Image (cartoon, rainbow, N blue to C red):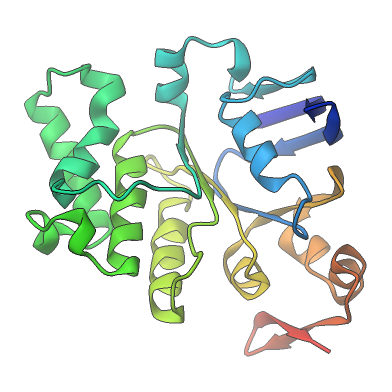
Length: 253
């Protein structure tokens, strides 16, 4: 479980997050939603320990993530940010292998290579192993970066808008794979995804954190947060959540 306690964050003297208190389940897929400027990316960086809060703490397991050594953090949490570099001349296999760096520190073993291969299989990249990353389509490239985070073999994977600019086919493919990785079992990961696509959040999330103006609005199972009333208030728009074939569907009224 991740425990967030009285989390406050300022940047350039401006408040970004205000007194966030939340618990995130250790397995399952958690979606972080909210309007632009709500503090979603800032919260994710605090969860990864890359941004230290001005007040409060984020506890990942038994560790205060902001106080952990970088090497220890990299074994607890894998973060994929919105901005990913072009990486000319780097192959897909080489990119995914970067995920193992916190474990082997430049001396990869057979076990590291096996994990890289497993991560590539998990995101259907084996046939692209020798392709340069800068020659891939947007969906293939994003799968490669997510596979790199997967190869880090952390209990938690944090992804900031991994579906940005992807067409529905690739977006659904990535969410299908992430959802599968988060299912209960010996190899389950805690997956936290910042999403602007409310339809994807409604379809795949087990747990939802909603933010507005840097404040926590919701922190509960999907069915409690993804309601017509809740989403309409959160986004200040008329939003309807309906059931279609047993699945929630989000529609702008």
